[in-house]
Image 1 (tube, rainbow, N blue to C red):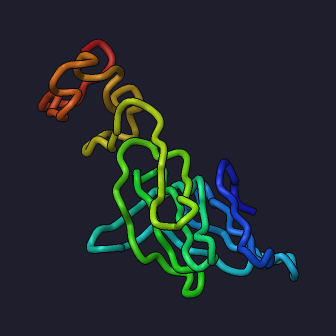
Image 2 (cartoon, rainbow, N blue to C red):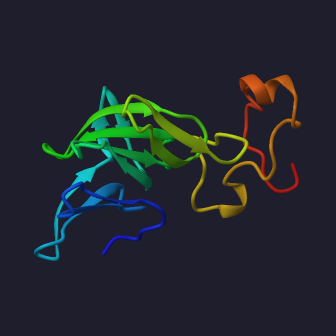
Length: 164
């Protein structure tokens, strides 16, 4: 069974349970009458001309009619909008740093996401995974409140590690 940290929602008819699959990178779908894992919606892979990896599916919400599923991909800082009928992703929306909580307005016209944390960190290219002491920055590259923090910026040309 999947690792479940946050998300789960029940279809309006009570027969289908949607669960955030965490590090599996998918929404796991259970058929409750048969008590089986019946299907899934995969978040990793190509979508909209971009390749997504390391998806981590957390909180979920359903439209009132149960036809549209909203899922937070915490690994890629995005909201997924999926069809429960086709069990496929319809849209991917960038949300910024660590989307954590999700809600749909009662009229279904708006989706709200709450973010946690202060910064949006991304993988540093060229990191030597065989040398864990040199896998990136040990501290933020600039001070809190500086312009680089607000607009982003290149910290340095090389990697920072212990003693640098």
